[in-house]
Length: 265
Ligand SMILES: [Zn+2]
Ligand SMILES: [Zn+2]
Image 1: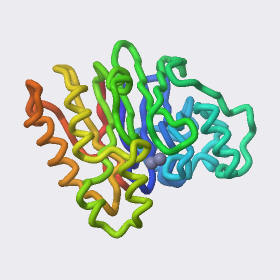
Image 2: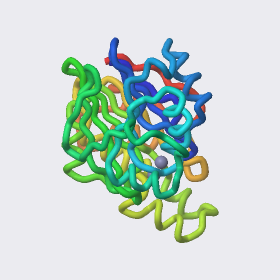
Image 3: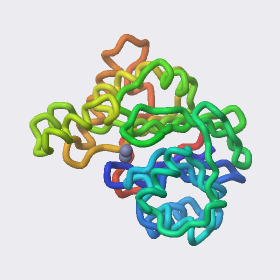
């Protein structure tokens, strides 16, 4: 499997996961042009896509969905709650109903030779999910937009080869920053976003000898910066109650506007 972030951050998210034969995007929160450019750098085009997985209806995850699905008619996989929420806001413009495939938390399904398992995440959206994707005994996980983690999420992210994990904000930067009170409370809340510290603590519960690569993603533009997210997560790992040091793993920040390294597992 190949795994990379085409864009990641509160301004737009798009992740590629694929095997030799099957290619999917998780979220399409950037322009059609940027998605195409990302796919081209993987020697693919929109025409090669076998499916689009959507985590939830917030615009930083679906901004480009209308455009790319109208252009190629790619099947869209997401929960019923997310389909309804997108329809309510008419976020996508006109798309034929047939291209929607409603999925449910904890029910695995196949796209080509990929097995996809959605799991529910605590976030202030209609029916948000994270995804675990497997192929030939290897697996990658995507968990962004979660206000907190719990044993259920930890269980769904065990034994991964690679992971993209949200490290949204630094709590102090958020607290002293210029966001209005209600927005600060929303982000810090149990259905908000994962702080750098919590990302580090969650990661400690997921590390194992064969974990190859970790992307930190969905960084806030206002309340975080790359070095801080990286250093905070690394020190949680190194100082945490586990046998590892952060240097034992390849940990990197997925950039807002640049395609990341391509991880092969
Ligand atoms: Zn969201
Ligand atoms: Zn988001």
